[in-house]
Image (cartoon, rainbow, N blue to C red):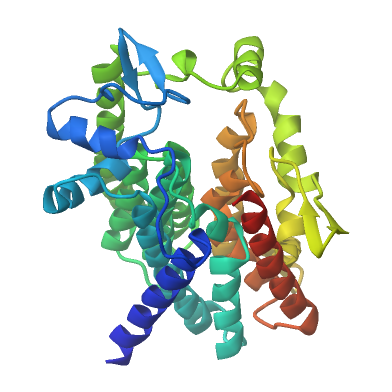
Length: 414
Protein backbone atom coordinates (compact mmCIF):
# COMPACT_ATOMS: atom_id res chain seq x y z
CA UNK A 1 0.00 0.00 0.00
CA UNK A 2 2.88 2.35 0.84
CA UNK A 3 4.39 1.85 -2.62
CA UNK A 4 1.20 3.21 -4.15
CA UNK A 5 0.14 5.61 -1.41
CA UNK A 6 3.27 7.78 -1.22
CA UNK A 7 3.52 8.44 -4.99
CA UNK A 8 -0.23 9.08 -5.19
CA UNK A 9 -0.20 11.55 -2.30
CA UNK A 10 2.90 13.18 -3.78
CA UNK A 11 1.23 13.55 -7.19
CA UNK A 12 -1.95 15.03 -5.74
CA UNK A 13 -0.05 17.37 -3.41
CA UNK A 14 2.14 18.75 -6.20
CA UNK A 15 -0.85 19.05 -8.53
CA UNK A 16 -3.02 20.96 -6.04
CA UNK A 17 -0.20 23.22 -4.84
CA UNK A 18 0.95 23.96 -8.40
CA UNK A 19 -2.66 24.59 -9.43
CA UNK A 20 -2.96 27.08 -6.59
CA UNK A 21 0.27 28.84 -7.53
CA UNK A 22 -0.77 28.95 -11.20
CA UNK A 23 -4.11 30.59 -10.43
CA UNK A 24 -3.25 32.72 -7.42
CA UNK A 25 -5.13 30.09 -5.36
CA UNK A 26 -8.40 30.93 -7.08
CA UNK A 27 -8.28 27.48 -8.72
CA UNK A 28 -9.89 28.99 -11.79
CA UNK A 29 -7.70 28.07 -14.79
CA UNK A 30 -6.97 30.87 -17.21
CA UNK A 31 -6.82 30.51 -20.98
CA UNK A 32 -3.29 31.18 -22.12
CA UNK A 33 -1.97 31.32 -25.67
CA UNK A 34 -3.17 27.92 -26.82
CA UNK A 35 -2.47 26.28 -30.14
CA UNK A 36 -2.52 22.65 -29.02
CA UNK A 37 -6.30 22.42 -28.62
CA UNK A 38 -6.86 23.66 -32.19
CA UNK A 39 -4.05 21.39 -33.41
CA UNK A 40 -5.64 18.40 -31.66
CA UNK A 41 -8.93 19.23 -33.35
CA UNK A 42 -7.19 19.46 -36.73
CA UNK A 43 -5.43 16.12 -36.25
CA UNK A 44 -8.81 14.54 -35.51
CA UNK A 45 -9.89 15.88 -38.91
CA UNK A 46 -6.80 14.50 -40.64
CA UNK A 47 -4.91 17.77 -41.05
CA UNK A 48 -1.99 19.52 -39.33
CA UNK A 49 -2.72 23.21 -39.83
CA UNK A 50 -4.53 25.48 -37.37
CA UNK A 51 -7.76 26.73 -38.88
CA UNK A 52 -8.63 30.43 -38.49
CA UNK A 53 -6.46 31.14 -35.43
CA UNK A 54 -7.65 34.25 -33.53
CA UNK A 55 -4.00 35.05 -32.74
CA UNK A 56 -1.03 34.27 -34.99
CA UNK A 57 1.93 35.13 -32.74
CA UNK A 58 4.66 32.48 -33.05
CA UNK A 59 2.69 30.64 -35.72
CA UNK A 60 4.11 29.75 -39.12
CA UNK A 61 2.35 30.88 -42.30
CA UNK A 62 3.09 28.61 -45.22
CA UNK A 63 1.07 27.91 -48.36
CA UNK A 64 -1.79 30.08 -47.15
CA UNK A 65 -2.19 28.05 -43.94
CA UNK A 66 -1.10 28.50 -40.34
CA UNK A 67 1.04 25.91 -38.56
CA UNK A 68 2.52 25.54 -35.09
CA UNK A 69 6.33 25.27 -35.12
CA UNK A 70 6.22 22.89 -32.17
CA UNK A 71 5.78 19.15 -32.28
CA UNK A 72 2.37 17.55 -31.97
CA UNK A 73 3.02 15.56 -28.77
CA UNK A 74 0.88 17.69 -26.39
CA UNK A 75 -1.94 17.79 -28.95
CA UNK A 76 -2.03 13.98 -29.03
CA UNK A 77 -2.78 13.91 -25.31
CA UNK A 78 -5.56 16.46 -25.75
CA UNK A 79 -7.39 14.39 -28.37
CA UNK A 80 -8.93 11.86 -25.92
CA UNK A 81 -9.76 14.69 -23.50
CA UNK A 82 -11.60 16.55 -26.26
CA UNK A 83 -13.46 13.39 -27.24
CA UNK A 84 -14.57 12.83 -23.64
CA UNK A 85 -15.43 16.43 -22.81
CA UNK A 86 -16.72 17.37 -26.26
CA UNK A 87 -14.87 20.70 -26.16
CA UNK A 88 -11.51 22.37 -25.69
CA UNK A 89 -10.03 22.19 -22.19
CA UNK A 90 -7.57 24.64 -20.59
CA UNK A 91 -4.09 23.35 -21.50
CA UNK A 92 -2.92 24.35 -18.02
CA UNK A 93 -4.35 21.04 -16.83
CA UNK A 94 -1.98 19.22 -19.18
CA UNK A 95 0.99 21.14 -17.79
CA UNK A 96 -0.05 20.46 -14.20
CA UNK A 97 -0.61 16.76 -14.84
CA UNK A 98 2.77 16.16 -16.45
CA UNK A 99 4.60 18.44 -14.00
CA UNK A 100 3.17 16.43 -11.09
CA UNK A 101 3.93 13.12 -12.81
CA UNK A 102 7.46 14.35 -13.50
CA UNK A 103 8.01 14.99 -9.78
CA UNK A 104 6.80 11.47 -8.97
CA UNK A 105 9.23 9.93 -11.47
CA UNK A 106 12.04 12.01 -10.02
CA UNK A 107 11.05 10.81 -6.54
CA UNK A 108 11.57 7.21 -7.68
CA UNK A 109 14.88 8.22 -9.24
CA UNK A 110 16.04 9.79 -5.97
CA UNK A 111 15.03 6.61 -4.14
CA UNK A 112 17.30 4.63 -6.44
CA UNK A 113 20.13 7.15 -6.05
CA UNK A 114 19.92 6.75 -2.27
CA UNK A 115 19.83 2.96 -2.47
CA UNK A 116 22.51 2.35 -5.10
CA UNK A 117 24.80 5.40 -5.20
CA UNK A 118 24.58 7.67 -2.15
CA UNK A 119 24.02 5.68 1.06
CA UNK A 120 24.75 8.81 3.14
CA UNK A 121 21.72 10.56 1.65
CA UNK A 122 19.25 10.72 4.52
CA UNK A 123 15.49 10.46 4.16
CA UNK A 124 15.05 14.15 4.96
CA UNK A 125 17.77 15.09 2.47
CA UNK A 126 16.02 13.07 -0.23
CA UNK A 127 12.77 14.95 0.32
CA UNK A 128 14.61 18.26 0.44
CA UNK A 129 16.19 17.52 -2.96
CA UNK A 130 12.76 16.61 -4.33
CA UNK A 131 11.34 19.83 -2.88
CA UNK A 132 14.11 21.80 -4.59
CA UNK A 133 13.46 20.08 -7.93
CA UNK A 134 9.70 20.67 -7.77
CA UNK A 135 9.55 24.20 -6.34
CA UNK A 136 13.02 25.76 -6.41
CA UNK A 137 13.96 25.44 -10.08
CA UNK A 138 12.49 26.46 -13.42
CA UNK A 139 10.31 23.36 -13.05
CA UNK A 140 7.83 25.32 -10.92
CA UNK A 141 7.82 28.25 -13.35
CA UNK A 142 7.19 26.17 -16.47
CA UNK A 143 4.94 23.76 -14.58
CA UNK A 144 2.43 26.43 -13.56
CA UNK A 145 1.82 27.98 -16.97
CA UNK A 146 -0.53 26.88 -19.72
CA UNK A 147 0.90 28.72 -22.71
CA UNK A 148 1.88 26.71 -25.74
CA UNK A 149 5.63 26.98 -25.06
CA UNK A 150 5.35 25.76 -21.47
CA UNK A 151 2.92 22.93 -22.23
CA UNK A 152 5.30 21.63 -24.89
CA UNK A 153 8.27 21.81 -22.55
CA UNK A 154 6.65 20.12 -19.58
CA UNK A 155 5.06 17.26 -21.51
CA UNK A 156 8.40 16.58 -23.21
CA UNK A 157 10.34 16.94 -19.97
CA UNK A 158 8.32 14.17 -18.35
CA UNK A 159 9.56 11.71 -20.96
CA UNK A 160 13.10 13.00 -20.50
CA UNK A 161 13.02 12.30 -16.76
CA UNK A 162 11.39 8.91 -17.37
CA UNK A 163 14.16 8.05 -19.82
CA UNK A 164 16.83 8.88 -17.24
CA UNK A 165 15.03 6.86 -14.57
CA UNK A 166 14.80 3.83 -16.86
CA UNK A 167 18.54 3.48 -17.35
CA UNK A 168 20.30 5.24 -14.47
CA UNK A 169 20.87 2.19 -12.28
CA UNK A 170 23.61 -0.33 -11.66
CA UNK A 171 21.75 -3.40 -12.89
CA UNK A 172 20.72 -2.61 -16.44
CA UNK A 173 19.15 -4.96 -18.94
CA UNK A 174 18.69 -4.66 -22.68
CA UNK A 175 15.10 -3.61 -21.97
CA UNK A 176 16.29 -0.87 -19.62
CA UNK A 177 18.26 0.63 -22.47
CA UNK A 178 15.46 0.13 -24.98
CA UNK A 179 12.77 1.78 -22.85
CA UNK A 180 15.10 4.67 -22.04
CA UNK A 181 15.85 5.29 -25.71
CA UNK A 182 12.14 4.93 -26.49
CA UNK A 183 11.31 7.73 -24.03
CA UNK A 184 13.93 10.00 -25.54
CA UNK A 185 12.65 9.15 -29.01
CA UNK A 186 9.11 10.21 -28.09
CA UNK A 187 10.25 13.79 -27.44
CA UNK A 188 11.06 14.17 -31.13
CA UNK A 189 7.32 14.76 -31.40
CA UNK A 190 7.57 17.51 -28.77
CA UNK A 191 10.61 19.49 -27.63
CA UNK A 192 13.11 17.73 -29.87
CA UNK A 193 16.27 18.94 -28.08
CA UNK A 194 15.54 16.57 -25.17
CA UNK A 195 16.33 13.63 -27.46
CA UNK A 196 19.99 14.46 -26.85
CA UNK A 197 19.61 13.02 -23.35
CA UNK A 198 19.99 9.72 -25.18
CA UNK A 199 23.70 10.34 -24.61
CA UNK A 200 23.17 8.89 -21.10
CA UNK A 201 22.16 5.38 -22.22
CA UNK A 202 24.59 5.64 -25.15
CA UNK A 203 27.55 6.32 -22.86
CA UNK A 204 26.51 3.71 -20.28
CA UNK A 205 25.98 1.13 -23.03
CA UNK A 206 29.39 1.89 -24.49
CA UNK A 207 30.92 1.64 -21.03
CA UNK A 208 29.27 -1.71 -20.35
CA UNK A 209 30.17 -3.40 -23.62
CA UNK A 210 33.04 -1.55 -25.31
CA UNK A 211 35.09 0.36 -22.75
CA UNK A 212 35.26 -2.31 -20.08
CA UNK A 213 38.33 -4.52 -20.13
CA UNK A 214 36.22 -7.43 -18.87
CA UNK A 215 34.20 -7.73 -22.09
CA UNK A 216 35.26 -10.39 -24.58
CA UNK A 217 35.39 -9.77 -28.33
CA UNK A 218 32.37 -12.03 -28.98
CA UNK A 219 30.38 -10.07 -26.43
CA UNK A 220 31.32 -6.82 -28.16
CA UNK A 221 30.12 -8.15 -31.52
CA UNK A 222 26.82 -9.18 -29.93
CA UNK A 223 26.59 -5.78 -28.24
CA UNK A 224 26.97 -4.03 -31.60
CA UNK A 225 24.14 -6.10 -33.06
CA UNK A 226 21.90 -5.54 -30.04
CA UNK A 227 22.81 -1.86 -29.89
CA UNK A 228 21.65 -1.31 -33.46
CA UNK A 229 18.23 -2.62 -32.44
CA UNK A 230 18.10 -0.91 -29.03
CA UNK A 231 19.01 2.51 -30.34
CA UNK A 232 18.12 2.21 -34.01
CA UNK A 233 14.52 1.00 -33.78
CA UNK A 234 13.00 3.62 -31.42
CA UNK A 235 15.13 6.50 -32.69
CA UNK A 236 14.54 5.42 -36.28
CA UNK A 237 10.77 5.27 -35.85
CA UNK A 238 10.44 8.65 -34.14
CA UNK A 239 12.97 10.32 -36.41
CA UNK A 240 10.86 9.09 -39.30
CA UNK A 241 7.74 10.58 -37.68
CA UNK A 242 9.63 13.84 -37.10
CA UNK A 243 10.63 14.13 -40.76
CA UNK A 244 7.22 12.99 -42.01
CA UNK A 245 5.48 15.63 -39.88
CA UNK A 246 7.71 18.32 -41.37
CA UNK A 247 7.17 17.05 -44.91
CA UNK A 248 3.38 16.93 -44.55
CA UNK A 249 3.36 20.54 -43.37
CA UNK A 250 6.10 22.19 -45.40
CA UNK A 251 6.94 19.77 -48.19
CA UNK A 252 10.46 19.40 -46.79
CA UNK A 253 11.47 16.89 -44.07
CA UNK A 254 14.20 19.25 -42.84
CA UNK A 255 11.96 22.31 -42.55
CA UNK A 256 10.62 22.89 -39.04
CA UNK A 257 8.93 26.20 -39.83
CA UNK A 258 11.08 28.74 -38.04
CA UNK A 259 12.05 30.43 -41.30
CA UNK A 260 8.42 31.55 -41.70
CA UNK A 261 7.49 32.24 -38.08
CA UNK A 262 5.49 35.30 -37.01
CA UNK A 263 7.25 36.76 -33.99
CA UNK A 264 8.45 39.89 -32.21
CA UNK A 265 10.45 42.27 -34.48
CA UNK A 266 13.59 42.07 -32.34
CA UNK A 267 13.63 38.27 -32.55
CA UNK A 268 12.87 38.34 -36.26
CA UNK A 269 15.80 40.66 -36.92
CA UNK A 270 18.17 38.41 -34.95
CA UNK A 271 17.03 35.34 -36.86
CA UNK A 272 17.32 37.02 -40.26
CA UNK A 273 20.72 38.52 -39.49
CA UNK A 274 22.52 35.60 -37.86
CA UNK A 275 20.32 32.58 -38.59
CA UNK A 276 18.12 30.39 -36.43
CA UNK A 277 21.11 28.64 -34.89
CA UNK A 278 24.50 30.30 -34.86
CA UNK A 279 27.63 30.66 -32.76
CA UNK A 280 26.78 34.36 -32.71
CA UNK A 281 23.97 33.61 -30.25
CA UNK A 282 26.06 31.60 -27.77
CA UNK A 283 27.49 34.52 -25.79
CA UNK A 284 24.03 36.02 -25.25
CA UNK A 285 22.52 32.73 -24.14
CA UNK A 286 25.42 31.97 -21.80
CA UNK A 287 25.07 35.41 -20.27
CA UNK A 288 21.38 34.97 -19.50
CA UNK A 289 21.65 31.36 -18.39
CA UNK A 290 24.63 31.77 -16.06
CA UNK A 291 25.46 35.41 -15.34
CA UNK A 292 22.38 37.66 -15.56
CA UNK A 293 21.59 38.63 -11.96
CA UNK A 294 18.17 39.84 -10.77
CA UNK A 295 18.11 42.40 -7.97
CA UNK A 296 16.08 42.55 -4.78
CA UNK A 297 14.74 45.90 -3.63
CA UNK A 298 12.24 47.29 -1.14
CA UNK A 299 9.11 49.06 -2.36
CA UNK A 300 6.01 48.43 -0.25
CA UNK A 301 7.58 45.07 0.49
CA UNK A 302 10.44 43.03 -0.92
CA UNK A 303 10.46 43.09 -4.74
CA UNK A 304 12.42 41.34 -7.45
CA UNK A 305 13.68 43.08 -10.57
CA UNK A 306 14.73 40.76 -13.39
CA UNK A 307 15.34 40.67 -17.13
CA UNK A 308 12.58 39.00 -19.15
CA UNK A 309 15.23 37.50 -21.43
CA UNK A 310 16.47 35.29 -18.62
CA UNK A 311 18.26 35.08 -15.29
CA UNK A 312 21.15 33.03 -13.92
CA UNK A 313 20.21 29.53 -12.83
CA UNK A 314 22.91 29.79 -10.15
CA UNK A 315 21.36 32.92 -8.66
CA UNK A 316 17.82 31.58 -8.67
CA UNK A 317 18.91 28.12 -7.49
CA UNK A 318 22.17 28.56 -5.51
CA UNK A 319 22.43 24.83 -4.62
CA UNK A 320 23.25 24.23 -8.30
CA UNK A 321 26.74 25.58 -7.53
CA UNK A 322 27.44 22.21 -5.89
CA UNK A 323 27.47 20.55 -9.32
CA UNK A 324 31.07 21.72 -9.71
CA UNK A 325 32.01 19.39 -6.85
CA UNK A 326 30.72 16.40 -8.82
CA UNK A 327 33.89 14.95 -10.33
CA UNK A 328 33.67 12.00 -12.68
CA UNK A 329 37.24 10.96 -11.94
CA UNK A 330 39.35 10.11 -8.91
CA UNK A 331 42.80 8.70 -8.28
CA UNK A 332 43.21 5.44 -6.40
CA UNK A 333 46.80 4.38 -5.71
CA UNK A 334 48.01 6.43 -8.63
CA UNK A 335 45.40 5.06 -11.03
CA UNK A 336 42.80 7.27 -12.67
CA UNK A 337 39.32 5.88 -12.07
CA UNK A 338 36.38 7.15 -14.14
CA UNK A 339 32.83 7.12 -12.78
CA UNK A 340 30.64 6.42 -15.85
CA UNK A 341 27.47 7.54 -14.08
CA UNK A 342 28.63 11.04 -13.19
CA UNK A 343 30.40 11.28 -16.55
CA UNK A 344 27.18 10.41 -18.39
CA UNK A 345 25.31 13.17 -16.51
CA UNK A 346 27.93 15.78 -17.39
CA UNK A 347 28.09 14.73 -21.03
CA UNK A 348 24.29 14.74 -21.36
CA UNK A 349 23.94 18.13 -19.67
CA UNK A 350 26.46 19.77 -21.99
CA UNK A 351 25.30 18.11 -25.21
CA UNK A 352 21.61 18.71 -24.52
CA UNK A 353 22.10 22.43 -23.89
CA UNK A 354 24.10 23.06 -27.08
CA UNK A 355 21.07 23.61 -29.38
CA UNK A 356 19.48 26.03 -26.89
CA UNK A 357 22.72 27.98 -26.56
CA UNK A 358 22.95 28.24 -30.34
CA UNK A 359 19.34 29.40 -30.71
CA UNK A 360 18.54 33.01 -31.58
CA UNK A 361 16.00 33.34 -28.75
CA UNK A 362 16.75 32.99 -25.04
CA UNK A 363 13.16 31.98 -24.32
CA UNK A 364 11.77 35.51 -23.92
CA UNK A 365 9.62 36.40 -22.13
CA UNK A 366 10.30 34.41 -19.01
CA UNK A 367 11.43 34.25 -15.42
CA UNK A 368 14.68 32.37 -15.03
CA UNK A 369 16.00 30.39 -17.96
CA UNK A 370 13.29 27.95 -18.99
CA UNK A 371 15.40 26.06 -21.52
CA UNK A 372 17.40 24.76 -18.56
CA UNK A 373 14.39 22.58 -17.72
CA UNK A 374 15.84 20.12 -20.25
CA UNK A 375 18.62 19.32 -17.78
CA UNK A 376 17.14 20.31 -14.40
CA UNK A 377 16.84 16.69 -13.24
CA UNK A 378 20.49 16.13 -14.19
CA UNK A 379 21.61 19.24 -12.31
CA UNK A 380 19.88 18.11 -9.11
CA UNK A 381 21.53 14.70 -9.41
CA UNK A 382 24.93 16.29 -10.00
CA UNK A 383 24.62 18.55 -6.96
CA UNK A 384 23.78 15.51 -4.81
CA UNK A 385 26.81 13.65 -6.17
CA UNK A 386 28.89 16.77 -5.57
CA UNK A 387 27.81 16.89 -1.94
CA UNK A 388 28.12 13.08 -1.72
CA UNK A 389 24.65 13.03 -0.24
CA UNK A 390 25.75 14.98 2.84
CA UNK A 391 23.54 18.02 3.29
CA UNK A 392 24.63 21.06 5.32
CA UNK A 393 22.95 24.21 6.66
CA UNK A 394 24.14 26.33 3.73
CA UNK A 395 22.44 23.97 1.30
CA UNK A 396 19.18 24.14 3.27
CA UNK A 397 19.29 27.95 3.22
CA UNK A 398 19.90 27.79 -0.53
CA UNK A 399 16.86 25.57 -1.05
CA UNK A 400 14.63 27.91 0.96
CA UNK A 401 15.96 30.92 -0.97
CA UNK A 402 15.32 29.17 -4.30
CA UNK A 403 11.72 28.38 -3.46
CA UNK A 404 11.03 31.91 -2.23
CA UNK A 405 12.68 33.68 -5.17
CA UNK A 406 10.80 31.55 -7.71
CA UNK A 407 7.52 32.40 -6.02
CA UNK A 408 8.44 36.08 -6.17
CA UNK A 409 9.17 35.80 -9.88
CA UNK A 410 5.95 33.94 -10.63
CA UNK A 411 3.91 36.51 -8.70
CA UNK A 412 5.69 39.37 -10.48
CA UNK A 413 4.69 37.97 -13.87
CA UNK A 414 1.12 37.12 -12.93
